[in-house]
Length: 304
Image 1 (cartoon, one colour):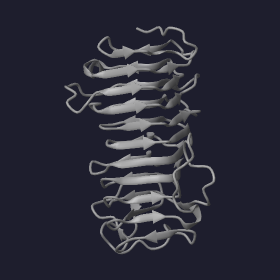
Image 2 (cartoon, one colour):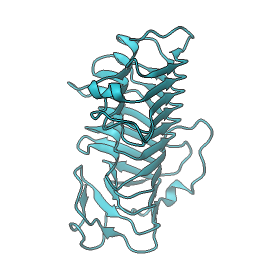
Image 3 (tube, helix red, strand yellow):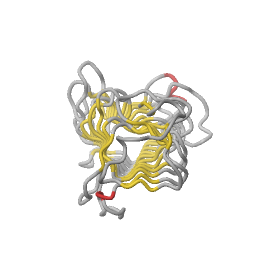
Image 4 (cartoon, helix red, strand yellow):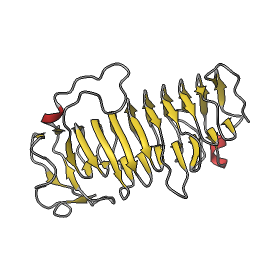
């Protein structure tokens, strides 16, 4: 994701805002300072304070209908663009069709009513840097992301659809939240393993709640939820909580793995599992808290 004109030089000129889009800002749009980010083709932008990048053709924002997941039905035409970097606190990206990915390099960013399609070169569909945090609402992510559709720390997702991706659906970093979303119909790349959700890092303060997460079966489908933090230690910021979801697919639908994982505080409760896991649906540490998990048909859930 390259900044037009190089770091800290000039205005972002052509290619980002099309005729169907409106750019409402309190100042100018400037080229990204502090370096560029790896990824596919397309502009990289920094938005002025309190900026909003909206799309007239998409229509004004209204809350989606009950049960809506992903890009809402009835939205108007989206604005099209390449990869984008959002580098100002509070920026709002609304009504965009992005081919490549979105890097969030500032706190309190919002991405909503948009579609992000992987181009096979940009690692993530939406990812936070060390400086970033983002709320993702009513967004569809699809296509070829070599790493994952969503990645990084301090992100929350509500009513997200992740569909037809080639690698991981979402990487659950510190403070990640995924609620009322649908992750399904994977298309794993040849020779690789796809996980619907993966926890890495230290894995604290994570919530996965009221989602439908179905990895499916067949080659390249590893786990619907893989808990494999690469660092051990106390969970002062909060546990990993997986509750109220419908889960299915993979060799182990929910798998807690790696030596560090046994030190993680994990609560798995109130989930309903589809039958058909390649081995067993639930393989977790004995230290994990397990309550009220069963098959969708009410049958007891085997585990080890």
